[in-house]
Length: 483
Image (cartoon, rainbow, N blue to C red; front, side, top):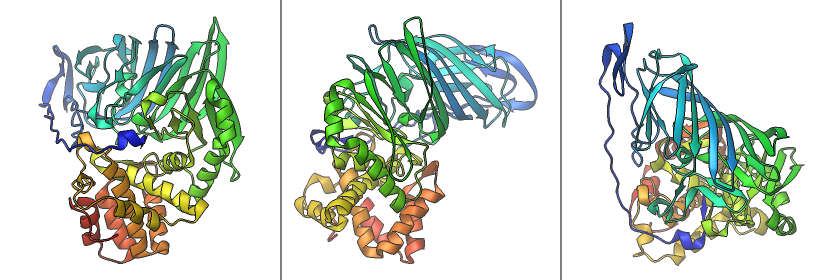
């Protein structure tokens, strides 16, 4: 995510805590929201937990199952903001499940089927509690089909992103959908945590004259009865917050990078001339190719951009395969967001307290692109930032390895994170530093990582004990003595 300069103002850290509810085991009868229903033999069936215990979002995600695929089949009418259809999850039980939760809120659910059979369900806040007809054995695949309709929800006045609206943003011709960190469940039922990544198919119908762009590849189009449908397929695992379906009057630009990677750019009609004049289409391809040389092979089937005309949102987002912008982006923003395709998308955080692994790396990426194009080194860029911020400034009074929920997107997470990497590069040298980045991406490709794993790998590759270095840069709440 890139925040506008006005959004990068520092705010005070606010610790948050929540109670993680644990479930008691049930032997014999399967527990339901309203009592017992199905008798099991030779097994103990228990409810899945209603959260994964993330330190910042304890109730985000759900226990007891792992999602492999989302099939999102929806229609949207911009005239009345109505979203309706069926989302089917294909998952595997990770315990003997009597019931399980989905993260989902606000819509009217007309029915839920598990393995084709109607299931009981009840909503408790953002949790949809589902009780299947029969218990789900550990290790077995199952499907959950949720049929619903209603108006998507925009998250507003959240301190997490400094008050900027996010999630489903209504636009005059459709929608801009950017969900980091916790808004995927405002428009589709999900196991809404980055530790449970899955593949996606989107089949989205909209009124004729309107188009849909999403993650992955455009694999089908059809029309009839005044509606046009667009099928997009993302075949590599993706965190739910990176999923998007952006609806509007788009100009589609299909091309290929110089390195041979398919590129798909969707631009709002009103911005198309400006986007073409800015060279952002070629820029996106050039950045993708350059990162492929430095960070390792690009992980996805296509690259590109989604450029909408929504200047009031104040951020852009690294939606997988093609970042999402509410304006025509400059080179710093493009290089930042495309660095996320490696650091954030292919390698995602295990839990949200590790967010500097996304934003610090992408900030460093923007400095690295500037080094490539202008010759100004990442060390010089970092030192300039370091020198500009006084020792007593609140910027330094945050541990970016644990930045706290409401300040997880503070400017320190971005810029102190970037300075950490620039200083590390200077300390261990280019050979070890870029080997570290490539190894990190390779070892965690399409998976998740933590700060502890990264710092351990840095010491292993460099042959240096870097514990003190990382304590100073990531944990201490004071300005380091030098960069």
